[in-house]
Image (cartoon, rainbow, N blue to C red; front, side):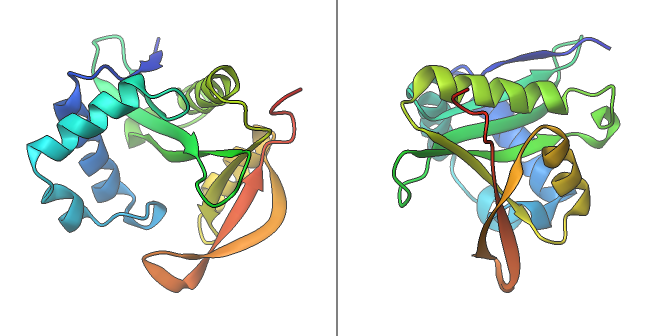
Length: 172
């Protein structure tokens, strides 16, 4: 199957809402948001979010579409406010039917890395993965991410830990 990865357009707020809610239903432990809180957000929130993610320099949402144009995944990239000179990959999601070696996940993550390289001056690229998500950890390590030794509490369940991985070849 052929996939297209591209940046979201401002008018695609409904699609952004739908794929975000799908991701939260499918993988609730992989994100810092709850489905209930996110589903309750008004249309205006989604319109502002899509507009910002479509136009801001260092902050963006990229989407994956299948041959029919259906959204089957998303990922974001944004500066880390509390860590100077750092951007992070966030909210990576690919629908279950499109996962695996032939799926678009690697292309999606590589596209977020390129976006961060092209649109920021940051020297470091990171991402966080819940320590219990072995599949995601293995995937990111295959792409070249490495353990940084940094661990933070998971926002929704502070007893769980999020491992911070770094991409050492970010500016290579």
